[in-house]
Image (cartoon, rainbow, N blue to C red; front, side, top):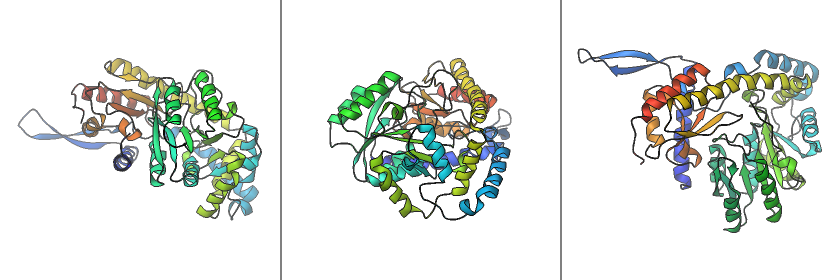
Length: 405
């Protein structure tokens, strides 16, 4: 993996690119100047920018009217509580719902302002230590860990998830790691899922090496096909796996409601970090989520989200099959992402510079600790028609290779 400074610089550049990629939803078309073939002049054509960069839900996935009604009901029912200061661990009815869902005491549930907030708390708790991560992995935790002086050790993956021999090597080498950070189901950025046999062996290794595991599971319920494997948390005895999830992918990201199910040894420590960070969580958002859940809206909403995003996944896989035979890609059964491996001579970062001119954006794989010829393609935000057009544009650019830097 590259040095922390290089990683941070590339991530900052990606933040800017991703923000720009969101603009087409507000401004549907952008102008590109292209040289005309007559008269030696130029002509202005309108080209819509298609973003495969942002891992966010399409607007039609968000149940706006239902949430508006739930927010109103939450205030009318419990306004004196949710509009004031409250317990830092979260809105108590929501903690009880989450505890019941995972079969734990609600005291072990810490509701956070998005699941990344909880990762910040955990990184603060283990600042200066060593942490194992998948290679590639979600870029935001990489930034969080680096900012707290944590040594990051990447562990290789294949199409079936984390490679356990590589994990064993990492456990034997260097200082004892504080924890392993893993996204075992529909991983960001690769879309891969850790196979059941490997999950069981991972828990065995965690017990053998007294290893704490952070299981980040925001995508597990967004499944289009196949049977769901047990979570690492379900396979564990509840003392070595910290389970993290969020309602961003299943209800709406703007509510900023994530949560952690903590081992008892970490309950009070992380709650204390939350107290020192903010006086009170966003109780109105949490109460809105609880009202949505209380009404039984989660499962119907999940079915709708699965249908909408499943169509997009299918469109991307079909387009890649038809348009990009020289590439190789993951075939996720759910989630938001496809991991693309281009021919070895292609530099995805250099390709992105040209892609932007052609109205297509994505995230180079190196931003996640991947190889130079890899890229993350998010299918969640764009329509099936945009996906087909975007892959066609991308394939045309791949035919004009850019050497690896």
